[in-house]
Image (tube, rainbow, N blue to C red; front, side, top):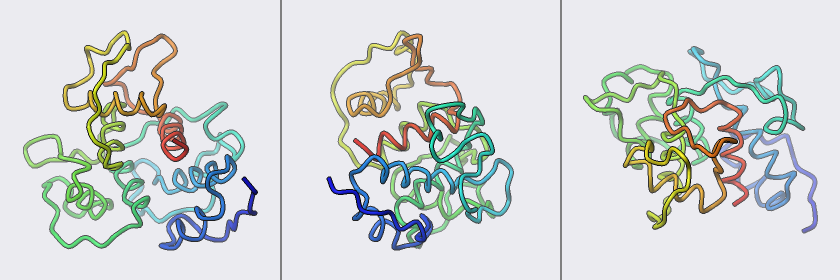
Length: 212
């Protein structure tokens, strides 16, 4: 594939990002890394009330060359933050209906969460709640990405040592993610489904999804 110089003047938040960037850099490794970097750059800092995107990577211990390979950050990610990343990946479409979750009224990510609910990406945690500021678990992260992808529920089994701990709702998503090489589990052979997803893990999952 001929490498086309990447026009890094078009930020991910720009509605034309995928038209102007992806058509030129896909499917080169450099292009995928740039796309993933742009997505991760949209992650608001935990507790940040203004989710306005910042310039460059927001993690002081990560550079463009090692954002998911070495010395990656162990900060966790919230459910609202990941919903926002997926919403922006979809082009930040307009939302026509009201937010169904009582704990998201006035939240900075309310529009993204409402969109995610409309598209079936999220269903909430019960009692008309979404828990936007709760840390997202690994199985929740994979499930949201699976639903976002629009893929059909796959058949198959899981060989993780703790596969029995994966929630029933998340099993199809985890099987899909394994079959598509999006996740491979922990070094000890487990998946750690209820463990909190770190930003490094989220970055790796997004990178693998973009390159599958």
